[in-house]
Image 1 (cartoon, one colour):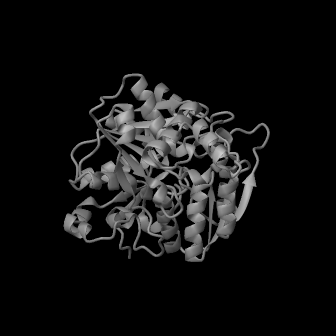
Image 2 (cartoon, one colour):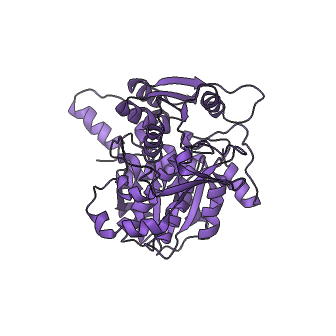
Image 3 (cartoon, one colour):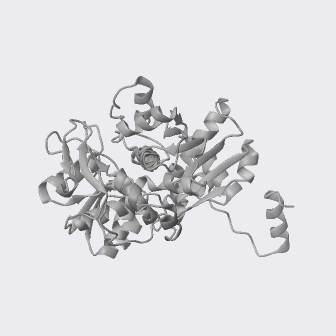
Length: 418
């Protein structure tokens, strides 16, 4: 008997529905992506704002909206802060700019949210080995929680993943396998090997995207749930979301579905999806109105957004269409500028992928598509310590000076302090 309010798993491809207790990861009929279906009437009877107020400030406070019988293991994911910007807002000419700072999650990115739900569901399904394909952040989240749960973790990562991310995975005890592309093959080779491991060895797949795990994406929705709660159960005018595989974007429309269904909100924010120009399959597909094509040779400083195929595009499209949103592509120079501005105006050090949302807002401001009085949220999704190589390459390191007064004054003058 399940204690979850999830009642079934429905295939987005063929529409076939399966009992939630079946524990499926994909549709056995067509291989399509499954989505969790909830009993909202039962949730309404159980859930209340009074109960919510008494709960700890982490994302498990929304347990009624998550596909779990209970929380078996946690590092206290979520519960990050929505920070009202002052200096950056003034610089950009905005009246109500907020930053959702996801760098304070246990492994320093928003990926702790979906992965924590995926791991807890895997435990309920009897997992001993879990596997993922990741640029590094989802792998770090999975490895940390796997260590706490006593699970074996196998991570397939890109061959050029940042050293800082690989070191974190090794320290946490993962089996880390960097994967090179196969000449002549399009697509992500890490995903190919994750799928092979799932099918051949029976390992439980826990990526943060795609038609491989319907449970984890439910964890992604708690980010926007927190934003709405922090705003007094109202919605922002605009939300800027970085997109790689579109798992986070899909979580946003799921969060809006949930809160509307139980009467917590009655309006929708305009959602803007942001991809780097060097890998924009979702942006191009949304403009065409058709399924994304695999992007050849993805390139960007935003390594966390280099999924060549946008796995969760259906829910991503729905998120934009239902909210009157759009999708934009930003150049690397603008991502770098946004990364510097978050650090120097707000003291928030993000990786390039985490700065893409602000870059999208800056692009829209330049094109005159933003009401400057709107309440706007940008999502700072991952810490700059995840990818220090980019920062060192672009800023360099300071040269030492002799320990003399003359040398000090010369340096201070060159820095513009004197």
